[in-house]
Length: 321
Image 1 (cartoon, rainbow, N blue to C red):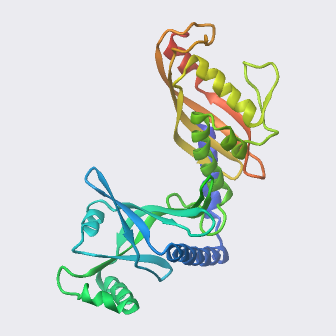
Image 2: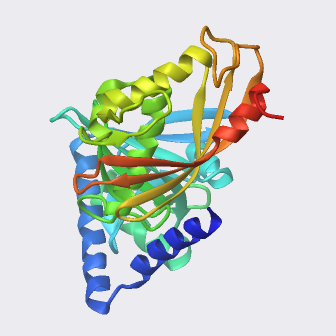
Image 3: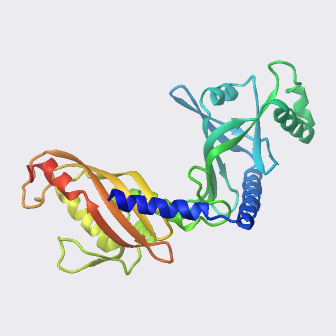
């Protein structure tokens, strides 16, 4: 399994490193276009919202000032405001902008990266020239400066009321930059939604993620089970033995066709149905489960191969020593 994971990791790394100068230039242009698009979405929302953390308490407030400078979207806050103190203490934050048309909203999550020195002076002047009335508030005297920040290590998504949405930018792991997500990132996003699907038995979401022709072989059926209905029927059967069973996505490695996933599966054997010939006994298990998922050209799951995991479940409920 470790060898297989290493092979997948090498494939992802090789794809990321095989960038020519021309493709690097295209990537840079794509980033600028993406930032301009994000800036336009923020402008369309008129007032958007910034969430920060104050100790153990989340804080939320509307925000309005933003400009694209040097290919990045920058925001301005006063150094005398609580929002600046919160970001300085904990830079993790999130922006949300509801779009007036189309029933979509922008979510941009990342880390506030403040400009300093000459860059801060230049950015502050950009904001003050664009909105001269702000000079009455930010007069550049000590304690009354405008502090400008952008989002680093960030992920921006344009999300419809019913996901999945469109990944606009992903700097968290070198993911999508501009336009549609790269296949590997698209597959990673599908697995994040798949986690929600199997934990909620959401058939409609399952149909968006699993190909109709996908055939799943399982000990509970002598013939393959097809599509989302087939896959979730197995999940439903498992819930008859473990009503609270949950899968937590711990880690994954993705390329354009395959995702290797490490799950943490847990549940309590207190349902109405036996499992592996054993009657429910109230024992709780937590097991590491490894799966390989294959994706078709449409970005849907077409194959699932379980590598490890069943032994951990059987040991947890007492079916194995």
